[in-house]
Image (tube, rainbow, N blue to C red):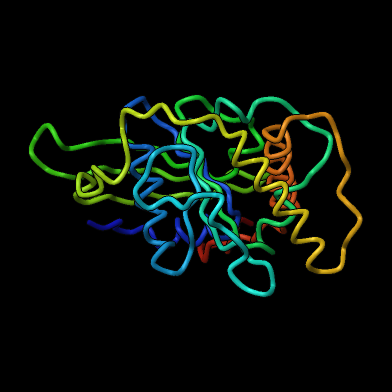
Length: 236
């Protein structure tokens, strides 16, 4: 089981820490999310998800993994696009994604809000019908005035089947987002920032949505790399 040609894609996900995996129902979105999680878990990350997965940790058992307050977690919200719709007025979780070392993955048929679509991936072709266990994916990054992307391949994706329940509709993300919000508060307190973050009436899901907006705004402020000029003759 392997992702082929995915090195740049994985580096991009680590840079922006928010990925929407698009595609049809039953198209392998969640399978890819959990396979990616496995790769990070081998680096010491923990898995937090709203679905049933053999690899997932119980929120009640999770705590900071070191004295600096790093969660070092992969957060997979299955069909998360259903909940990344409304807007909010504060940021909370996103501001600490890099500091607390969290990566968010949204495998969802329904698209999240545009600002949560900075990094996307979706399957293009599957060769199962001709007996080849291979899926071709396209990934993209879209920022102001800058686009990047490419392709990668998943060989033998069926080897991950059984690790999670494909029939489980998954819980809503309330418990996870509340937990993440509280951990953000704990992180601030750990580093001497004891004033609580602004309290609002929005749901925890709205807070996580605002986190996605913050990700996008921060990403859009990055300088756009200049493309090298062609070495061909200049026009006269």
